[in-house]
Image (cartoon, rainbow, N blue to C red):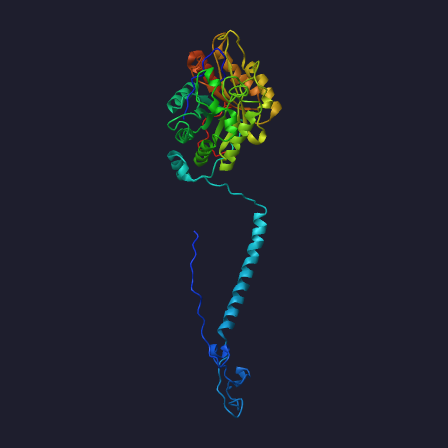
Length: 451
């Protein structure tokens, strides 16, 4: 979520040969010196009547019983071994040509219109045990990019990785969620940095879509998190994390089902080590780093990751979004993170939902028409009516003024402030009432494979 210079960092959660044989020279048969070799190698050809054999067969009732007055022995026509070999070889070649012609025609017709380039498969031994177990147990084909729903908006929650907490939120909200968000740092340890296959499987069994916020850092409190030289964008571009990225991508591919990948979000802010102008990063580095990571996923053959480019809402001093966008070929969805801080800060004031997101939404639409996800949002109660803020957001502003927003995730956590819908009975009731609308989708994705 977005940070401010005088606040601590959000208390987010993380899951983290050849051989040769020498043969003696062949010994050929020795032939007599008195006769040519062919007379020794081949049997003598008998001298017999070459009249067609049929003419020499006595016919019933025929007066003639022999072809000539001198009776001769009738011998069958002989064929040499060489002639037999040549005849067999000719028949074999003829059969091969007859069979090959239709196959060549079929290949030219089919494969010319269906070009395929099979992706190299990663060795299964490189995947973690959970991912291996899942890929072996799921016969379905690999997932594809997640598509927006045609007449509904996905709902989601950012909460702890424990699904028990998600189920409690859903009970309080009055609806099962479409998307569940998890934070994962590259610098995690003890497996927390690996692709979270077990968590993702539990989310899918719940009927929801996993959204993994994948962050290249070791989480620290602000402002220490601005300076992590090991995780500079240049190091990503130069390939120093390629081994880790390849392993993670291979495990994601093996999991097969579709998921959102929200890589390095809020890049236009000034509180992460992947922001340009911080941590030794230079202008243009973010786009190059994004494309480098994306290209690795493509080389591994990952098709089930839906890439979400997600800036923070615009604020004075934020980096221009147009300079940070990797391009439509590298992005599937866009996103926005934004909060109503009310009067909790000396420089903040109460803002409506449209005031929080309106400017950034227009900026994104000027760059791309990709579907938009509000990936983190919430409101405090200080300075206004939080329940009314929720009602206006979900029942008025979102469906009327933000038609390209196809999903919204509520940040139901306590960090610098208490963003939970359970902060008051009135707030919870307002959220519950908003979720009763059929406009907002629930957990309908248990068997979804993208498309």
